[in-house]
Length: 288
Image 1 (cartoon, helix red, strand yellow):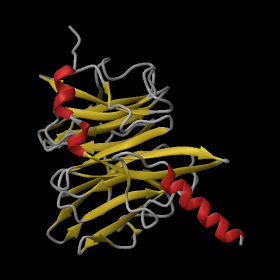
Image 2: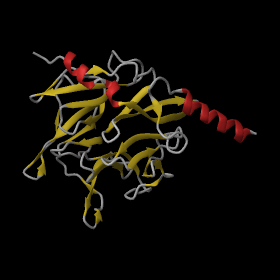
Image 3: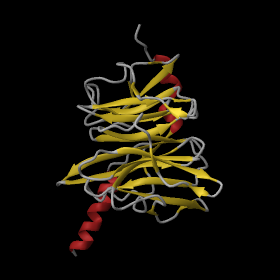
Image 4: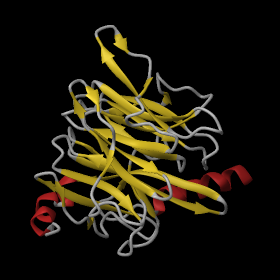
């Protein structure tokens, strides 16, 4: 009986937060109240996400494949190492690279790793150079078509950095401008393939609650003041981990909240056209 009640309660938590055109992604199969950080490959047939097990003590990356338009039961990602906490997988726009983060000991911090597809298969994950990784925590990295990497670095607060790929190597990462980074937390940057816009989360004053998702536009290397994505996506609980499935034209994100001491989090989708990115760009403002 207790098990039955627990199952009903879990199902309620999964479905109750979905509203409007926001939908739970693969409820119960993948979104099971313990999932965040969805990324989908450029061909739309593979996905990766983080299984959080109701907290932050155990974090592993899982994978699934789509067969006949249905996602298979998820399993540990091919590069996963359950000896460590691993988070924030991200496919490159061409599908030939995967970025993710790993915490290799309690004394260390999260670092960014990459695995790349070759003729003979995927390479062994490699830690990126000290141009990107430092003694601070680096996490949530996404990559553009030019192979520039945008990511979060947490020192006193979280800020967004970029490392440009020049002459076949990554240059020393630099923080984005103060129109993006403030004394609040700015984190989880999703860079568009052509680097014309950036979506990230922040806990700044105009949020609807915990953390909200924002968008900023790039004009000649200058980033516009961020715009809140609005109440069709953002709520009073925490939204994070933005991404886009360009194949199916779907915006991807996660929500998280703490209920009775346990973290409840799931994966969500929203029609990309409903974000109205073009309209938002028209009202964006840049520093003079």
